[in-house]
Length: 157
Image 1: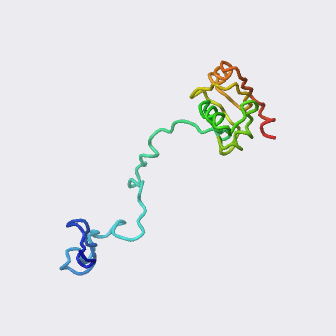
Image 2: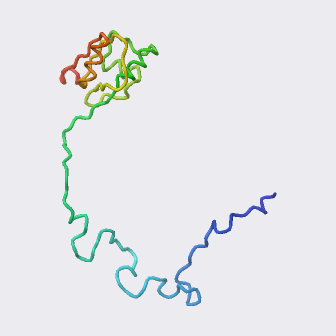
């Protein structure tokens, strides 16, 4: 097989339609756009326009609300903390938000770090973070550790 013998599968490529090239082409004169009107001209912008009728996106009721000053927490699960302790990347005796960032468990702090209870923790860990779920606090205390929630002002410093 040579390069000049290569060809695409039949039907894989389609020739471009050349409009406005005379009556014999089938798409001459008005190039398949019809007679007059906005759509026959260039620069048409009528995506959501419904001929003056109230567009659908405006007729439908709006729902919900996005709080402008909401807090965005970096979320971490207990199972991941345990994995990093096992790997020796985290010291179980003093796990702070800065230690979590340094070890690479969390990329950035955002408005604080929140611990969730997914996964198991077996190490006796002392954790200090901005937030935690009730189940996470119970799981850490059950393992013999302590999970303290740091005040927002102290976390910001």
